[in-house]
Image 1: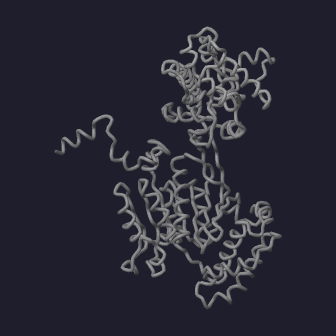
Image 2: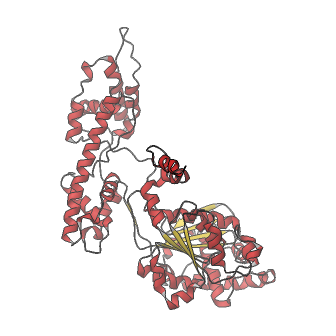
Image 3: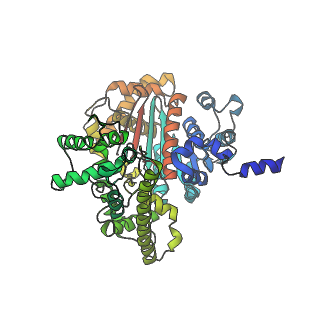
Length: 543
């Protein structure tokens, strides 16, 4: 029986258990993204409700391993807020309970725990945090957070700060540089090059003669070829200029419309491929150019000045730059994909192969430049895989580099981004107010050793104290802004509570950003995210 099962699992075409389990996410980030996730080791500091929700959303999709750092014991408050913890856990170590409960969700994931407070680890062995791909810090006091952030910044380890405070959710990504090859932009246009066809495409287009075709061939010619043929005609009549304005594009559509075959009664035939061509004029007839954000990457100092410490991303970016200057003649490598269209299979496959072969040829040229770059800095040619090369070439128009500011810059009196804060405070109910209030409650904690309004009897007295802390913060940082008293009262009533509803929402959002960091796919926010649970709105700020 076991042999039969093993044989069935090995049969080609059968879906593996892993593919069944992770089917939906594999469609999002592919096998290579899943592989990166399964090789990742993340660290959670403080297994609060927010931290548990984040880890849950990483364990379920199959993160390789996690380590929970928490020296605290489970309290009644933890049990009240948490979906996982029970009364029987009260008095036990929170890191151990969290690890054991989360491991039940996915047997493929390895979990560890350390019964230490983060301050103790930072004092005794700060290098402990170097072993992780990402560190998640939840509900940490400001002093501990700043120490941790500095250590991780120096070790170049990404840090995600998460915090639930009453009905407010807060996230901060602290990462020096995060290059993204697969940014998966919404509504990306196809790379067709119809305005300036490459030689192989030009030759293929010339092989069609729309004026001397059988009806069947005429109605099954790919719309892409139709647009290209009529674009040649347009160039001849308009001094080689591409149709740009609405009026010109309408005239171009009409030119294509006139090419539809007519029957013996002079009535146009029903040719769907021509209708498809007319419909696609707006998106297909556009100038081929390098996006501004890609120009910035190609002109970046990291792209110009290579060394043995340079990452593969920047080496490939430099190879890309060389290609653009030479073989590309000012253009990026051809992406190699075309949209589906009405055409017979033979014609479509031929056209598809023209683009595929050109993309392959361009990738080889970029690969040759990459090999030269690697040799020049004393690195082995195989240090960049073919998969990396192909991914970068097929996504060369969508590359992104995110650089966040450090926490010490954000918190520094002379380096804080005051302009960003002041500009958003034009609206007195902006989410920026919540950021200022979070800074104020941290100052309150620093002065009083606790957060405001933790117990009901403290709320009234703490309102004045919190207002003093807020005004002191605004004055110290030279921020000429005003915060409504309603927010001060509200934050005192919160009592630093961690409601499960807000923690669960933040847990989903935070896990999504961590997956982006690990897989290097999709674009992370830069750098602060605030969620307002009262109005159910959110905003990002560059602080």
